Length: 418
Image 1 (cartoon, helix red, strand yellow):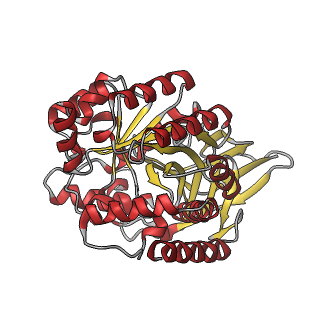
Image 2 (image 1 turned 30 degrees about the horizontal axis):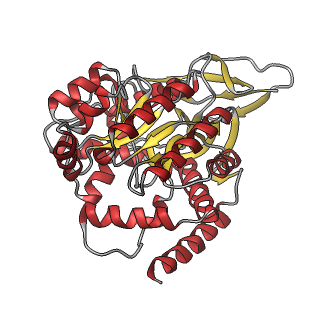
Image 3 (image 1 turned 90 degrees about the vertical axis):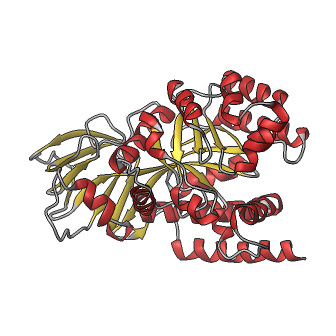
């Protein structure tokens, strides 16, 4: 059965459009868009006068388990203390605790209008992560982080789990390879990552140059920066997402741009951990936004990125960064994700937004940067299915998910202090 969404204003990000239009949804796709569509026999009709239909948003890099960092006991401040706490949490986390954290992040994402997460975990099993994401209903690409922090054996275990999951994942949840601590990874490790990616035809989600110590370590050990080593090992390109890039030089950024690599900016995370400030205005045509350890709320991320870059004197085009998230999701899933046009996946938001100034194509950017927020998200559709309807999550008990996550976090914190 098809669904007709009638009477709303439809928003496109690039080029900017705010126009009165109806949308028809059949299965998991948008099949018609016009100023006025006549209902078909037996079609579900939903009238949405005064509402705005907005593309579902995409986080290009999110750490599952970051919820448990909120208030976690730690020593010191800044990135070093945050990293140490995060690593201890990821190392100690049980499978049940990971599932609780994933469910919490997925529900929070949907309620915020984020319909797609490119996410990483510090542990497994990925099958349970995927099952939870499927149940809640977000679209996701997931990988377990590969590093040599705990030795080459654990590195290989993570590679093997990513490979096994990538071969099985289909539908709304896909597999990828993920990597961190690249400044300390051996040539053997990078070569193994390259081989696994080629064999499985998978994406790579990695973070780099978040901490200046990583760059220093890489140059001292390998006589080359992290970005240079990734280029040498052919670990860049249109199937690679690199998050942060705070301490990349312009020549390094230029080389990554030339290879078509996606560069994901996580403004709130970088500010919270005091790692320094990236220059996303230089990130090129594949620049997008990431939430990392912050809430999976792309409206808040867009606000943070806009304010930080404007304050630095190098403002970014927030609409382009959000639209690039859709282009990245399209690359990941092999089907159009994002623009509310015929043939695209039916991932969309119904916004109850009452603008206090004219809201049209010319003012869309200002409203996204300064007015719109997740409080306007009334309903959310992912892959043609309503996952939030009139602010109620349909695919999970939001209160129970939050309670389970709180208990899991408390138990985990106790284990860290024992």
